[in-house]
Image (cartoon, rainbow, N blue to C red; front, side, top):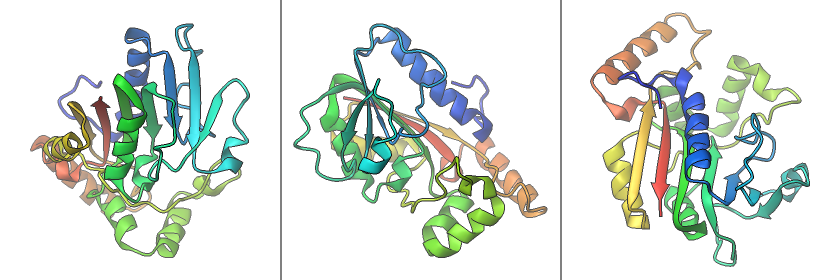
Length: 237
């Protein structure tokens, strides 16, 4: 994790990957699953160590799973639906910018608890709802927010990227106390939340960029995690 007192959004992806590799290296999970890693696997920058016996890519879409290399296992499930039929158990489950697309965050985490082996760890990187761009995305119609993202981030809609999916931000918060209470009800006994502040959505909007950056700095200094922009959520079964 970042060593500074305040974690900024520019550090969240690196910290997420560092955390993943720290777990893989030190805890030596044999069975790993990534939710929604069909086009951008979190561990793709390094070869997997020999102690990893299986790496499963999970997605709701059979079409997306068809693009996964044969070296990985695949599992087609609705991560927010019924997974009671799944017999596999995993030592590490991870997701990157996937949890915000789950309509029912509590059911999603219940499913992760079901799919984890005893002592297993789940790590999720998510945007958090009350940062203004994500709050706007949640409140306004999808057709309108899609056009806004196309204007501000056109690269997300090129042939190499997936564009924009509806986001619900259910149980996507930076507040450790709120998340601990909610996820303890699911059955997790070890819950950590690392929040990050700031974002890049207003980079092209002079004035609004400075205003929001100032608000983010103030909230970060006062540890007002309700206005964090991203969080790494870690839960152990």
